[in-house]
Length: 142
Image 1 (cartoon, rainbow, N blue to C red):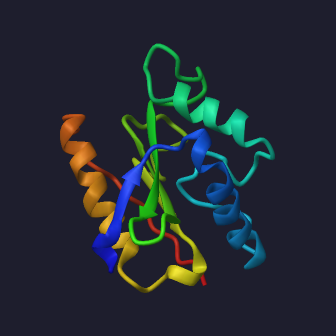
Image 2 (image 1 turned 30 degrees about the vertical axis):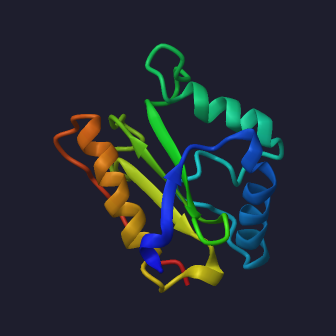
């Protein structure tokens, strides 16, 4: 089932599914959603969507951020958001120890190979962006 996912950019149409995804993290007392570009810190989906959209472009990226692509991992069989993953095209001083990529999988879908598949699919984005390296740091979430 792990290859039943596709990486998609956040859209307004995915708002309810995204809020449900975030809610599951919070219900499991997870205050940080890694790779979410602060989706865990914002109450307004539309503002978050605007921010992640602007941050994909070097001309519109927030001056305190780096160009970043953010994707939901959407399961094809039921259109459920399984995870979120981001790709930071460069690293600044703050990100140097965190790496180019952050990701999370909703707790009910962990240990099914989704994170591996998300990373695999993200590698295609890395190739398209002509990035030479991808640095990842991992933290165990219980």
